[in-house]
Length: 296
Image (cartoon, rainbow, N blue to C red; front, side):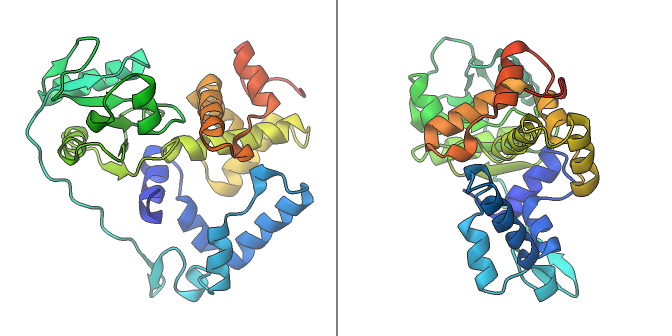
């Protein structure tokens, strides 16, 4: 999908996390982290939500443990993490922009950004053949989102609107999106100085997929009655430095949006790790907070 540095930047800048997942793995060391992942996976009878990634096993076998060996997902020189520079985005001339109305709230935010940048905005039900089409999927990739709406995927670029536009912005294009439109989208989104990350087409972007899985695991722990919701949240906030515990995180982004992301990820991949927890499903359906209720 993309490289570790881009994922870490998105989680820190866009998601408000203290450190990205790959920086955290390098800090703890794969000899510790992978062993914990394997232990949890087997103790839960190979529950797919806890299945370790083959990537961590491969890197553990290669001795790329992280800071303690001087190389993990990053290299370390005198103990300092060597973070690669972000790719430069070439300026692009303004072109017509058409915005999907799949999510009216997100569409309004993007329309304001386009207007502020001074780019022409198309308002017809269907875009012209020259327009840059901005999509706002939840748990979908650009390809599926474009085809579902009957759009020409050559014109489409998706923008992750889960966290809005105030921080880092993430975009991804379909495999056939015209390169000049990909660059135009990046140039538009960075026009006010906010950093932009460009991803390959993948279900759920980065932030959506990671946040949805964190919320889902937290909801499952609450469903099992392992601990009260407030205890789960406090433990994660103190232990991992997350901006919110998993259940408060679900409330922050919206339980129904998290459920939509998970359902779309499950439909697209067939991977049971994205199976929504009953705790999340029930509370999203009833409009409840994920922190409400002792059980069920």
